[in-house]
Amino acid sequence: MSADLSDRGFFFEKVALIGAGLIGGSIAIALREKKLVKEINCYDLNQAAGLKAVEYGAVDRCLQTASEAVEEADLVILAVPVLKTLDLLKEILPAVKTGALITDVGSTKGAIMAAIEQVLPASVYYIGGHPMAGSEESGISGADPALLENAVYVITPGPNSPESVVDNLCRMLLEIGAEPIIVDPLVHDRVVALVSHLPHLAAAVLVQSVTDSSEKELIHTLAAGGFRDSTRIALGNPDVWRDICISNRWALLSALKGFRKNLDTVEKLLSDQDSEAIYEYFLQAKEYRSSIPHRGRGILPEIYELVVLVKDTPGAIGKLTGLLGDAEINIDAIEIMHVRELAGGSIRLGFRDRETRLKALDLLKSNSYPTHVRE
Image (cartoon, rainbow, N blue to C red; front, side):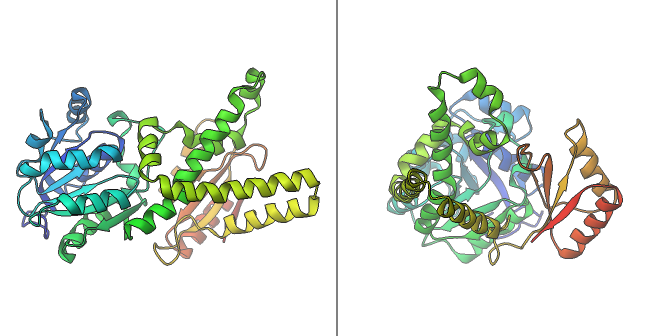
Protein backbone atom coordinates (compact mmCIF):
# COMPACT_ATOMS: atom_id res chain seq x y z
CA MET A 1 0.00 0.00 0.00
CA SER A 2 2.10 2.92 -1.25
CA ALA A 3 -0.12 5.17 -3.33
CA ASP A 4 -2.33 6.49 -0.57
CA LEU A 5 -3.64 5.89 2.93
CA SER A 6 -5.17 2.46 3.47
CA ASP A 7 -8.72 2.06 4.72
CA ARG A 8 -7.27 1.47 8.19
CA GLY A 9 -5.36 4.75 8.16
CA PHE A 10 -1.89 3.40 7.39
CA PHE A 11 0.42 5.09 4.91
CA PHE A 12 2.05 1.69 4.35
CA GLU A 13 0.85 -1.71 5.53
CA LYS A 14 4.23 -3.43 5.75
CA VAL A 15 7.62 -1.74 6.13
CA ALA A 16 11.11 -3.21 5.94
CA LEU A 17 13.89 -1.40 7.79
CA ILE A 18 17.36 -2.41 6.65
CA GLY A 19 19.80 -1.07 9.21
CA ALA A 20 18.65 -0.67 12.81
CA GLY A 21 20.83 2.30 13.68
CA LEU A 22 20.31 5.81 14.98
CA ILE A 23 18.38 7.30 12.05
CA GLY A 24 16.60 4.15 10.86
CA GLY A 25 15.60 3.34 14.43
CA SER A 26 14.35 6.87 15.05
CA ILE A 27 12.17 6.76 11.93
CA ALA A 28 10.80 3.34 12.85
CA ILE A 29 9.92 4.38 16.40
CA ALA A 30 8.20 7.52 15.10
CA LEU A 31 6.16 5.50 12.58
CA ARG A 32 5.03 3.08 15.28
CA GLU A 33 4.26 5.75 17.88
CA LYS A 34 2.12 7.63 15.36
CA LYS A 35 0.53 4.39 14.12
CA LEU A 36 1.30 5.32 10.51
CA VAL A 37 2.23 1.80 9.40
CA LYS A 38 0.86 -1.62 10.28
CA GLU A 39 4.02 -3.70 10.60
CA ILE A 40 7.80 -3.13 10.54
CA ASN A 41 10.30 -5.92 9.99
CA CYS A 42 14.02 -5.30 10.09
CA TYR A 43 17.38 -6.71 9.22
CA ASP A 44 20.74 -5.59 10.50
CA LEU A 45 24.13 -7.11 9.75
CA ASN A 46 24.67 -6.91 13.50
CA GLN A 47 22.03 -9.34 14.73
CA ALA A 48 22.26 -7.93 18.26
CA ALA A 49 21.26 -4.49 16.96
CA GLY A 50 18.23 -5.96 15.24
CA LEU A 51 17.16 -7.76 18.39
CA LYS A 52 17.60 -4.54 20.37
CA ALA A 53 15.35 -2.78 17.85
CA VAL A 54 12.65 -5.33 18.69
CA GLU A 55 13.30 -4.89 22.41
CA TYR A 56 13.04 -1.08 22.12
CA GLY A 57 9.77 -1.38 20.23
CA ALA A 58 11.16 0.09 17.02
CA VAL A 59 10.22 -2.94 14.92
CA ASP A 60 8.04 -6.03 15.17
CA ARG A 61 10.53 -8.67 14.05
CA CYS A 62 14.19 -9.06 13.23
CA LEU A 63 14.84 -11.42 10.32
CA GLN A 64 17.93 -13.37 9.28
CA THR A 65 18.49 -11.80 5.85
CA ALA A 66 17.71 -8.53 4.10
CA SER A 67 15.78 -10.38 1.41
CA GLU A 68 13.52 -11.99 4.02
CA ALA A 69 12.85 -8.59 5.58
CA VAL A 70 11.71 -6.95 2.32
CA GLU A 71 9.33 -9.73 1.22
CA GLU A 72 5.84 -8.28 0.68
CA ALA A 73 6.99 -4.90 2.06
CA ASP A 74 5.24 -1.83 0.66
CA LEU A 75 8.02 0.48 1.88
CA VAL A 76 11.70 -0.42 2.19
CA ILE A 77 13.95 1.95 4.17
CA LEU A 78 17.67 1.52 3.53
CA ALA A 79 19.36 2.97 6.61
CA VAL A 80 22.93 1.85 5.95
CA PRO A 81 26.20 3.69 5.19
CA VAL A 82 26.11 5.39 1.78
CA LEU A 83 28.74 3.19 0.15
CA LYS A 84 26.78 0.04 1.04
CA THR A 85 23.45 1.23 -0.35
CA LEU A 86 23.86 0.17 -3.97
CA ASP A 87 25.18 -3.32 -3.18
CA LEU A 88 22.36 -3.81 -0.70
CA LEU A 89 19.80 -2.67 -3.26
CA LYS A 90 21.09 -5.20 -5.79
CA GLU A 91 20.84 -7.91 -3.14
CA ILE A 92 17.21 -7.23 -2.20
CA LEU A 93 15.70 -6.32 -5.59
CA PRO A 94 14.77 -9.90 -6.53
CA ALA A 95 12.69 -10.09 -3.33
CA VAL A 96 11.04 -6.64 -3.58
CA LYS A 97 7.43 -6.84 -4.67
CA THR A 98 5.93 -4.99 -7.63
CA GLY A 99 4.79 -1.48 -6.74
CA ALA A 100 6.94 -1.18 -3.62
CA LEU A 101 8.69 2.06 -2.71
CA ILE A 102 12.35 2.01 -1.70
CA THR A 103 13.96 4.97 0.03
CA ASP A 104 17.23 5.62 1.84
CA VAL A 105 18.55 8.02 4.47
CA GLY A 106 22.04 8.65 3.05
CA SER A 107 23.79 11.99 3.40
CA THR A 108 24.80 12.13 -0.27
CA LYS A 109 22.43 11.66 -3.17
CA GLY A 110 23.94 12.34 -6.61
CA ALA A 111 26.09 9.25 -7.14
CA ILE A 112 23.62 6.83 -5.57
CA MET A 113 20.64 8.17 -7.52
CA ALA A 114 22.57 7.93 -10.79
CA ALA A 115 23.65 4.36 -10.04
CA ILE A 116 20.19 3.27 -8.94
CA GLU A 117 18.66 4.39 -12.23
CA GLN A 118 20.83 1.77 -13.95
CA VAL A 119 19.55 -1.19 -11.89
CA LEU A 120 16.03 -0.30 -10.76
CA PRO A 121 13.23 -2.16 -12.56
CA ALA A 122 10.22 -0.22 -13.80
CA SER A 123 8.01 -2.15 -11.38
CA VAL A 124 9.65 -0.61 -8.29
CA TYR A 125 9.89 3.04 -7.21
CA TYR A 126 12.90 4.71 -5.60
CA ILE A 127 12.90 8.04 -3.77
CA GLY A 128 16.14 9.21 -2.18
CA GLY A 129 15.96 10.71 1.29
CA HIS A 130 18.22 12.59 3.68
CA PRO A 131 16.88 13.56 7.12
CA MET A 132 19.01 16.51 8.22
CA ALA A 133 19.18 15.26 11.78
CA GLY A 134 21.64 13.44 13.95
CA SER A 135 23.30 13.07 17.31
CA GLU A 136 26.64 12.24 18.86
CA GLU A 137 24.96 8.98 19.83
CA SER A 138 25.13 6.05 17.46
CA GLY A 139 23.20 2.82 17.02
CA ILE A 140 19.70 1.85 18.03
CA SER A 141 20.36 2.77 21.68
CA GLY A 142 20.50 6.43 20.61
CA ALA A 143 17.35 6.27 18.47
CA ASP A 144 14.78 8.92 19.34
CA PRO A 145 11.81 10.09 17.25
CA ALA A 146 12.41 13.59 18.63
CA LEU A 147 15.43 13.77 16.31
CA LEU A 148 13.02 14.18 13.41
CA GLU A 149 10.89 16.92 14.97
CA ASN A 150 11.13 20.03 12.77
CA ALA A 151 14.07 18.47 10.91
CA VAL A 152 14.46 19.23 7.21
CA TYR A 153 14.02 15.96 5.33
CA VAL A 154 15.41 16.21 1.79
CA ILE A 155 13.58 14.16 -0.84
CA THR A 156 15.15 13.31 -4.23
CA PRO A 157 12.59 11.43 -6.35
CA GLY A 158 13.72 9.16 -9.16
CA PRO A 159 12.69 10.16 -12.70
CA ASN A 160 9.92 7.55 -12.79
CA SER A 161 8.45 8.21 -9.34
CA PRO A 162 4.74 9.06 -9.70
CA GLU A 163 3.61 12.26 -8.03
CA SER A 164 1.14 10.31 -5.90
CA VAL A 165 3.94 8.12 -4.47
CA VAL A 166 6.13 11.16 -3.71
CA ASP A 167 3.19 12.95 -2.12
CA ASN A 168 2.32 9.96 0.05
CA LEU A 169 5.88 9.73 1.38
CA CYS A 170 6.02 13.47 2.05
CA ARG A 171 2.72 13.41 3.93
CA MET A 172 3.96 10.53 6.08
CA LEU A 173 7.15 12.45 6.90
CA LEU A 174 5.07 15.46 7.90
CA GLU A 175 3.12 13.21 10.26
CA ILE A 176 6.31 12.19 12.10
CA GLY A 177 7.22 15.85 12.54
CA ALA A 178 9.77 16.29 9.76
CA GLU A 179 9.71 18.97 7.05
CA PRO A 180 10.16 17.32 3.63
CA ILE A 181 11.53 19.36 0.73
CA ILE A 182 12.23 18.17 -2.80
CA VAL A 183 15.73 18.95 -4.06
CA ASP A 184 17.75 17.95 -7.12
CA PRO A 185 20.37 15.34 -6.05
CA LEU A 186 23.40 17.23 -7.36
CA VAL A 187 22.25 20.54 -5.87
CA HIS A 188 21.73 18.74 -2.56
CA ASP A 189 25.29 17.38 -2.62
CA ARG A 190 26.86 20.77 -3.38
CA VAL A 191 24.95 22.51 -0.60
CA VAL A 192 25.44 19.87 2.10
CA ALA A 193 29.15 19.78 1.23
CA LEU A 194 29.25 23.44 2.34
CA VAL A 195 26.89 23.46 5.31
CA SER A 196 27.27 19.94 6.71
CA HIS A 197 30.25 17.98 5.41
CA LEU A 198 32.80 20.84 5.43
CA PRO A 199 31.93 21.84 9.03
CA HIS A 200 32.48 18.25 10.13
CA LEU A 201 35.87 18.15 8.45
CA ALA A 202 36.75 21.52 9.96
CA ALA A 203 35.77 20.28 13.42
CA ALA A 204 37.92 17.17 13.01
CA VAL A 205 40.86 19.27 11.81
CA LEU A 206 40.45 21.66 14.74
CA VAL A 207 40.53 18.75 17.20
CA GLN A 208 43.55 17.21 15.47
CA SER A 209 45.32 20.58 15.66
CA VAL A 210 45.46 20.39 19.45
CA THR A 211 46.14 16.66 19.90
CA ASP A 212 49.91 16.98 19.50
CA SER A 213 50.23 19.78 22.01
CA SER A 214 52.40 19.22 25.07
CA GLU A 215 49.79 21.12 27.11
CA LYS A 216 47.03 18.52 26.90
CA GLU A 217 45.97 18.75 30.53
CA LEU A 218 45.69 22.52 30.40
CA ILE A 219 43.84 22.29 27.09
CA HIS A 220 41.28 20.00 28.74
CA THR A 221 40.85 22.55 31.50
CA LEU A 222 40.59 25.64 29.31
CA ALA A 223 38.65 24.19 26.37
CA ALA A 224 35.47 26.07 27.17
CA GLY A 225 32.20 26.57 25.31
CA GLY A 226 33.70 27.93 22.11
CA PHE A 227 35.93 24.92 21.52
CA ARG A 228 33.34 22.38 22.63
CA ASP A 229 30.59 23.90 20.49
CA SER A 230 32.84 24.22 17.45
CA THR A 231 34.03 20.62 17.67
CA ARG A 232 30.88 18.84 18.90
CA ILE A 233 30.18 17.31 15.49
CA ALA A 234 33.62 15.68 15.46
CA LEU A 235 32.01 13.15 17.82
CA GLY A 236 30.06 11.69 14.88
CA ASN A 237 30.35 8.07 13.74
CA PRO A 238 33.65 7.69 11.79
CA ASP A 239 32.18 4.93 9.57
CA VAL A 240 29.38 7.22 8.44
CA TRP A 241 31.65 10.18 7.83
CA ARG A 242 34.22 8.15 5.94
CA ASP A 243 31.51 7.09 3.48
CA ILE A 244 30.18 10.64 3.21
CA CYS A 245 33.63 12.00 2.37
CA ILE A 246 34.25 9.37 -0.31
CA SER A 247 30.80 9.51 -1.90
CA ASN A 248 30.69 13.32 -2.00
CA ARG A 249 34.41 13.93 -2.49
CA TRP A 250 34.15 16.19 -5.58
CA ALA A 251 31.72 18.61 -3.97
CA LEU A 252 33.72 18.47 -0.74
CA LEU A 253 37.03 19.13 -2.53
CA SER A 254 35.46 22.20 -4.13
CA ALA A 255 34.21 23.38 -0.72
CA LEU A 256 37.69 22.84 0.76
CA LYS A 257 39.23 25.06 -1.91
CA GLY A 258 37.00 27.91 -0.84
CA PHE A 259 37.75 27.21 2.81
CA ARG A 260 41.50 27.19 2.16
CA LYS A 261 41.22 30.48 0.29
CA ASN A 262 39.60 32.05 3.34
CA LEU A 263 42.26 30.60 5.65
CA ASP A 264 44.92 32.15 3.42
CA THR A 265 43.11 35.48 3.63
CA VAL A 266 43.01 35.38 7.42
CA GLU A 267 46.65 34.31 7.63
CA LYS A 268 47.69 37.29 5.52
CA LEU A 269 45.60 39.68 7.64
CA LEU A 270 47.35 38.40 10.75
CA SER A 271 50.79 38.62 9.15
CA ASP A 272 50.08 42.19 8.04
CA GLN A 273 48.63 43.08 11.48
CA ASP A 274 45.77 44.72 9.58
CA SER A 275 43.43 45.32 12.49
CA GLU A 276 40.83 47.20 10.44
CA ALA A 277 40.62 44.43 7.83
CA ILE A 278 40.43 41.79 10.58
CA TYR A 279 37.54 43.68 12.15
CA GLU A 280 35.76 43.88 8.77
CA TYR A 281 36.29 40.17 8.18
CA PHE A 282 34.70 39.27 11.52
CA LEU A 283 31.92 41.82 10.97
CA GLN A 284 31.01 40.38 7.57
CA ALA A 285 30.98 36.87 9.00
CA LYS A 286 28.81 38.00 11.92
CA GLU A 287 26.32 39.79 9.67
CA TYR A 288 25.94 36.84 7.30
CA ARG A 289 25.62 34.36 10.15
CA SER A 290 22.98 36.57 11.74
CA SER A 291 21.00 36.55 8.49
CA ILE A 292 20.59 32.77 8.57
CA PRO A 293 17.35 31.87 10.36
CA HIS A 294 16.96 28.66 12.33
CA ARG A 295 14.78 27.46 9.48
CA GLY A 296 14.94 28.64 5.91
CA ARG A 297 12.70 31.41 4.67
CA GLY A 298 10.90 30.54 1.47
CA ILE A 299 11.28 26.78 2.02
CA LEU A 300 10.10 26.13 5.56
CA PRO A 301 7.89 28.17 7.86
CA GLU A 302 9.83 30.90 9.60
CA ILE A 303 10.57 30.44 13.27
CA TYR A 304 10.16 33.43 15.57
CA GLU A 305 12.99 33.44 18.06
CA LEU A 306 13.87 34.77 21.46
CA VAL A 307 16.87 34.16 23.71
CA VAL A 308 16.56 33.56 27.44
CA LEU A 309 19.42 33.82 29.94
CA VAL A 310 19.26 31.13 32.60
CA LYS A 311 21.34 30.28 35.64
CA ASP A 312 23.76 27.37 35.28
CA THR A 313 21.98 25.23 37.86
CA PRO A 314 20.43 21.74 37.77
CA GLY A 315 16.86 21.78 36.49
CA ALA A 316 17.05 25.28 35.02
CA ILE A 317 16.04 24.20 31.52
CA GLY A 318 13.26 21.95 32.82
CA LYS A 319 11.88 24.79 34.91
CA LEU A 320 11.94 27.12 31.91
CA THR A 321 10.19 24.71 29.53
CA GLY A 322 7.77 23.64 32.26
CA LEU A 323 6.72 27.24 32.79
CA LEU A 324 5.90 27.60 29.10
CA GLY A 325 4.23 24.19 28.95
CA ASP A 326 1.96 24.96 31.89
CA ALA A 327 0.82 28.05 29.98
CA GLU A 328 0.17 25.86 26.90
CA ILE A 329 2.83 27.69 24.90
CA ASN A 330 4.33 25.29 22.36
CA ILE A 331 8.08 25.48 21.68
CA ASP A 332 8.88 24.62 18.05
CA ALA A 333 12.68 24.80 18.40
CA ILE A 334 15.13 24.94 21.26
CA GLU A 335 18.90 25.37 21.29
CA ILE A 336 21.33 25.57 24.19
CA MET A 337 23.78 28.42 23.57
CA HIS A 338 25.89 27.99 26.69
CA VAL A 339 29.07 29.88 25.91
CA ARG A 340 30.54 31.22 29.15
CA GLU A 341 33.06 33.51 27.56
CA LEU A 342 30.31 35.34 25.66
CA ALA A 343 26.94 35.50 27.36
CA GLY A 344 26.66 33.01 30.16
CA GLY A 345 23.96 30.37 29.98
CA SER A 346 21.47 31.16 27.25
CA ILE A 347 18.68 29.23 25.56
CA ARG A 348 17.32 30.04 22.11
CA LEU A 349 13.61 29.32 21.77
CA GLY A 350 11.69 29.25 18.50
CA PHE A 351 7.95 29.67 18.02
CA ARG A 352 5.60 29.14 15.08
CA ASP A 353 4.22 32.70 15.00
CA ARG A 354 4.76 36.18 16.42
CA GLU A 355 1.75 35.94 18.71
CA THR A 356 3.08 32.84 20.47
CA ARG A 357 6.50 34.44 20.82
CA LEU A 358 4.95 37.57 22.34
CA LYS A 359 2.96 35.46 24.80
CA ALA A 360 6.15 33.60 25.79
CA LEU A 361 8.10 36.83 26.08
CA ASP A 362 5.53 38.39 28.42
CA LEU A 363 5.37 35.25 30.57
CA LEU A 364 9.14 34.92 30.90
CA LYS A 365 9.64 38.59 31.69
CA SER A 366 6.93 38.45 34.34
CA ASN A 367 8.89 35.59 35.90
CA SER A 368 12.12 37.64 35.92
CA TYR A 369 13.89 35.85 33.06
CA PRO A 370 16.31 38.15 31.18
CA THR A 371 14.99 37.81 27.63
CA HIS A 372 15.50 39.43 24.26
CA VAL A 373 13.97 38.92 20.83
CA ARG A 374 16.07 37.74 17.87
CA GLU A 375 14.99 39.03 14.47
